[in-house]
Amino acid sequence: MKLQEYIRLIRPHQWLKNLFVFLPLFFSGNMTNWSMLLATIYAAMSFAFISSSIYCLNDIIDVETDKQHPEKRNRPIAKGSVSLQEAYTLMILMCLLAYGVLFLLGLNGKSILVISIYFVLNILYCVNLKQIPLVDIFIVSSGFVLRIILGGLVCNIELSQWIILMTFLLSLFLAISKRLDDIRIYNEKKILIRKNISHYNVEYIQLTLSIIASVTIVCYIMYTVDVDVVSRIDNHYLYLSSLLVILGVLRFLQIAIVEKQCCSPTKILMKDKFIQICIVTWGVFFLVLLYW
Image (cartoon, rainbow, N blue to C red; front, side, top):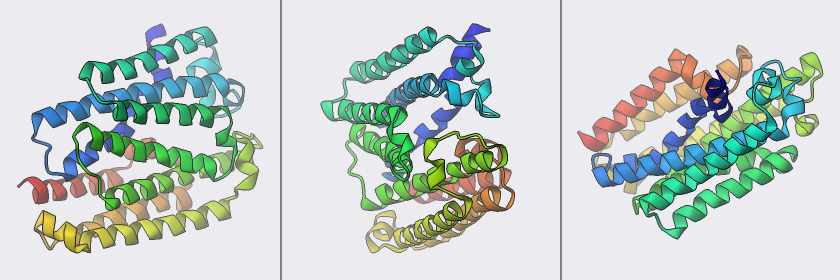
């Protein structure tokens, strides 16, 4: 039973985020290159372990506020099934595994630097920066950009401005949406999950979501009609994938604003069939374009 609580503490379901590490390899058309694929898998593992280390630290620091949260109070530390000493031990172990994977793979100093930047930045986030409005969501978004940077480094793939922009905008959109949950809990139960919630409100978040969603869609459409991109892929029908992106974004907005459900991207991805179909269809579309 204790092992199950340790597993819950490191949140393996959040490892879905590390699929971003595979994006440079996928869009470069080298997914069938075994050495590159193996290097990317190891890089994703390293990010999985280092992010789990941060989750442990976050739960240690937020233990008192988590006890007041309707869902987070069931987290291992908050409910007392894992002690603080055990949590610190698990945090250190996850950190060692993250760097151990990189060293065993023989990756260069730049890759280690990327993981270190993520680690330090998120420690600062857990300790204080997550209480600063806007800075908090930008740090969360930067974590996804660091993931694709690592994916490019381990395979020596030069990243385009499009993949960096799209990753940042999409992750910013998702990070902002999560603030809706905190605001609703505060409005309904007067539980202050984050000190900076007073600097946000539902109207502001919904307006910001609409702006970022619009910019994201426009940026994606520009990517699909970019002359260099169309020439590299050698297909003039890339723009059709925009329909799937628009549908996916609109569905997410519907869940967040109309249905007022939990805005955790991971939970939505695992539960909402409509978004799952959009993502799978989008992936198959690119798979055919790049590898058929």
